[in-house]
Length: 112
Image (cartoon, rainbow, N blue to C red):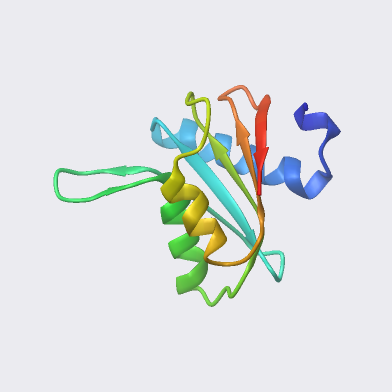
């Protein structure tokens, strides 16, 4: 699956996640789209006292802004699959798809 074979709104969240990761120079970038079409981007947090994945931060941002469900999520990372906590955070808000992409935007997987 390539980024160009995705729906435009799904390509957009991958692009947003890539940009967040590149801008902050972090291991992960994520973007989520809520039920109203609003998007939230984030990167992972790696502090001595706080460690959160980019997906966890993006989901928290969406929820704290009033989102009640997600339509889709994207995670850009070098990893080969998303972590269970990332999938759980998305599942907490429904059955949104998670697109896993490489730093170059190539889609490596789709998880529901």
